[in-house]
Image (cartoon, rainbow, N blue to C red; front, side, top):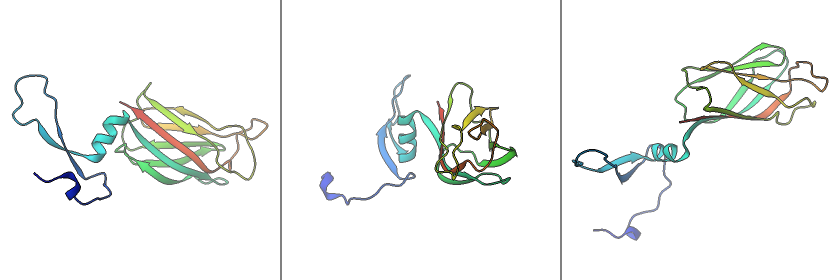
Length: 153
């Protein structure tokens, strides 16, 4: 058997494999030693999937997203439905009631407004609203805003 120090050092990728034992609850296991992807081990340890992006929105345009991480299995689409109202729509029904949490700020906009708000409007949609200092729905208040959706298992 090789000593652990004889293996080369590497930076793991999410699709790389780890060797482990799978717990069996019934009967005798045929082969409890299995290979697991690194991403599945990390996801199991966190207890949630995540979509993280930097969001910017200007004038009457839909928000643009710089996607930082998305392990939800869904594609996200951004639209503007009116002044200060934006919807992120998932390609599948992943926004489970009582298991979906959103973290959001307005980043560094050129003008201040009230803190942005979010609502889970369905299993596929989350709506964001932005308002100016006088509580009027307004655009251009998200500039590289931190946006994260966590869906707990």
